[in-house]
Image (cartoon, rainbow, N blue to C red; front, side):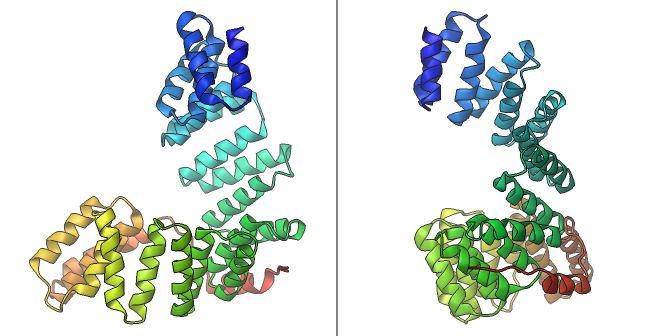
Length: 360
């Protein structure tokens, strides 16, 4: 009776109370493993990932063929950032089940591991079983884009928009594809169309980036400001707003914004670097060299690492240490292009002319 009551609470999405009951049942009878299973699933829903992993691992040792529990365990590992373990468990689930949701979860995990080719295969397998899942089609288009296959991404998104012309995710994602190939005017049209249906900070941010590329600083500033009105802690929008101000020569405003970010995130490498570029005099001090090396050691993000290596290269070039300048330029380029695919200008020009879409 207690287990059924807990199941009813779970079905009503009252996960906190359901978890309390499942936990009590599991503690009273340690051999009643269904309570342990449901305990782990509740913990996932409540974002208690470590507990979910602990309880689901114990359950799966006794019930290795329970594919739902196995997939839930994979999802718990994914949510906790342990992507390799998540991959191992979702593969085990897929050995005995071709459930579309399992394929889509496997695809998401492969994307997080930057294995876009594998992600594409999993999305395609899942769509064989659930071909009308629009969210999965949009995710597949994202994997195509990340792999550098912009035409496949654009074609798929165009097909979605032919059926659902007001789909905000499809409009936005197609806009990012156009932005990626340098078709900024088309990207602006798509982002603006998406904003006509849903005003979201990330869409405004994307719109601002496209305006930046066309050197329309006033429009980009307006877009980033609107994004920050909706999401005041949108750090990337703050950075780009500062860069737009800097492009107009409004350095005081840019430095003020950079300082606000650094106050909240003292080790933000890119912002420290950008502020330095505005503030520094033509004299290059030993202190600046030390600070850039400290920032480089702290940088976890590849874009940050690339940017700071370029900064060090310029510093060494400015002080006539050309061998070291070449060394850091080489390091920066290796980081910058490690995961990029080459796309010829001829290919991009062809893509721009062949992709057509109507927007209401």
